[in-house]
Image 1 (cartoon, rainbow, N blue to C red):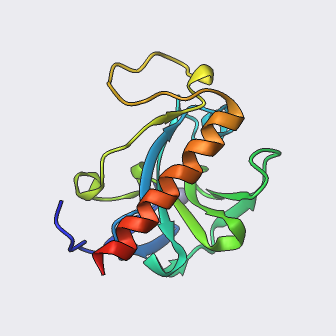
Image 2: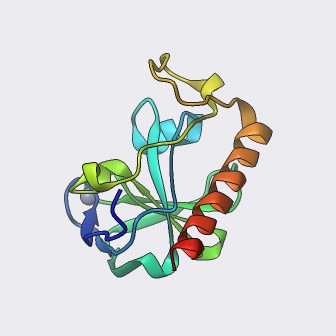
Image 3: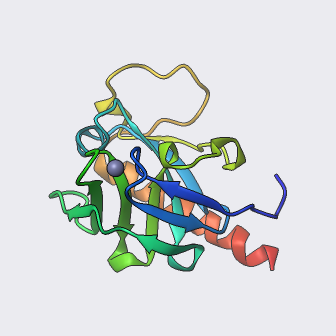
Length: 157
Ligand SMILES: [Zn+2]
């Protein structure tokens, strides 16, 4: 993958909420937890992780943030108009999570590296990605993936 990321304008499905994504996500994974299922209205959340400075021009007037019980540090924004995911914030906004469905050009994104909360899956996934179960294992793998993504980012400079 090239190191140049062409900025994309992310949005919810009805384009009421928009933002510019200016850098390659540091991670991408597929989460099957029941909260992601409820949040997306789909079987799973194929989501990217970005750092706060990677996302600019946030226009989130029609986003309503809500915190589910777990994980406690994620604030999930739903569009008040289309009721689809807008954007998610973690660690007080230091990390930004954008579902891949909100990108106009998904092909420019890194491939997903793993399935999380696979024990909660709505259906089996036919791929070779590692599959992790439960909160403790999934949380540990997120932290590891974040560290690797950050390292790649720093090493590139
Ligand atoms: Zn919308």
